[in-house]
Length: 487
Image 1 (tube, one colour):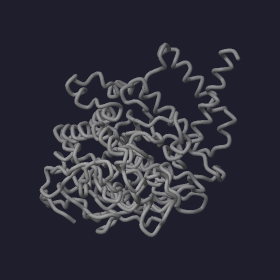
Image 2 (cartoon, helix red, strand yellow):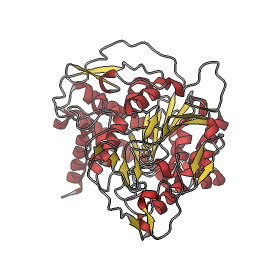
Image 3 (tube, helix red, strand yellow):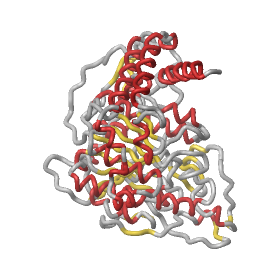
Image 4 (cartoon, helix red, strand yellow):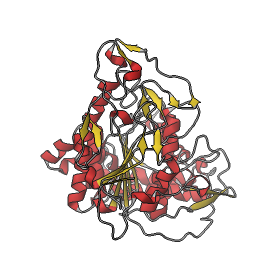
C-alpha cells in the first residue's frame, strides 16, 4: 500500500474512532434533544476536580483503614491476617493509616476520609465492570453509552480556560488486556465527542500530546489538519451520526487545534518545573501525573484524572504477593499525593479544587464479594500460609472501602463512616454508595441533582433515576470552623 492510501486509511479510522466514543446500540438520529428540565443553580464550593484513581482494587485494611496487624511467619493461619502493615498515626488525633502512608497522613488535617464505601453488586466481580460503574454511576451494560463523570462536568460547566481541555485523563494506556472494556467508560457517551477525555497515557510526555508528531513541521501538520477537516465533513462515516454528534466532533477537533497553537500548551511541559520539585513528584508515571495535575489545576483544568493504571495482575490488582505489591504501590503514591495537597494549598488553589482518592473495590484474604452475596472465588488462598506470596489481601471485597477527599469545601479532619474491626471488615456505620459519591462531587461544583437530558424520549440523569443525594455532612458550612471530628 502506498503512503497516500495509508494516510487515507488513517484518517478514515480516526474519524470512525472519534464517533465510536459516542456510539450506542440505538439510532443516533434523535439523540441528545435538549435539557428536559430547567434546574436551579446551587452554590458551589469548588470549580476544579482531581480524581486520583487507585486502579485495580486497593485494600482498605492495608491502606487507610488498618486493622489488627499480623506479621508474616510460616505457618500463620490466613483467617488471622487482617492487616499486613502496622498502624501509624496521622496528623488527625485518633486517625491511623497503615505503614507506608505517612506523607498522606500528614495532610489529613486538610481533608476528610470516608471509611464506609460499598461497591455495587454487579454479579461476578470484574475490575472493568466495577470501574465502569464507579466512573459513570451506571451498571453496565446500558442501551446508551453512559457519560464518564468528567464528561458530565465538562458538559455542564464548560472549560475553566477556553484553551485547556475540560476533561483530561492521565496514566491509563489502552494497549494491554481489557483495553476495550476500559475504553467503554473513558467516553462522553451521548454528550458528544467534545466532552470526552483528552488522553495522556504518559504524563512525562504530556507536551508531546499537544504537539505535532515527531518529525512533522507545524506547517505540514496544519495542512494535514485542514485536509482532515474537509474529509471528516464529507465522510460517509459521519452520515450515521446525528447533526449534534457531527457538530460535537468538529468542535472537538477545533479545541485540539486551538491548544496546539496556544502558549497554554506549555502547561503540559514538566521540564519547566524546578528539579527539586520534579524529583519530589517523580515516583514514576503516577507521581508525574500528580505534578501535571497540579499545573493543570492552577491553569484552568476542570476535571483531571490521574490513574495508577489498571493492568490485569499488576499494580493494585494483587492476586498474589499482596503485601509486597501494596508496599510498592504505597511508595508510588504517598509522596506525590501529599505534595500535591501542599502545593495547591500554598498556591491558594486547594479551597477551589476538590481532590478525590478512590478505588473500584477493596480486598480481603478470605472473603470474595460480600457477606450474603457469594460470588466465584478468583484466588486460591491456602488456610495455612507457607509461602510469603499468599501473605496479603488478594480476594475482591466489595462491602467496605475508603475514599479520601481534600479541598473544595470539604470539612477538615473529618472521619465519616466505619468498618468492622473483625472479619468481615464491612461498612457498619453510614454506608456510602456510588450515587452519593457522584452527587457529592456535583454538589461541590454547584450542579443540581436533577440535571438530565432527554435521550430517545426518556430522561437520563447524572445518577440513575436522579435519586442520588449528596452527603452534606462532608461539607463545611459558611461559618463553620475547621474541626477534627468523627461522623
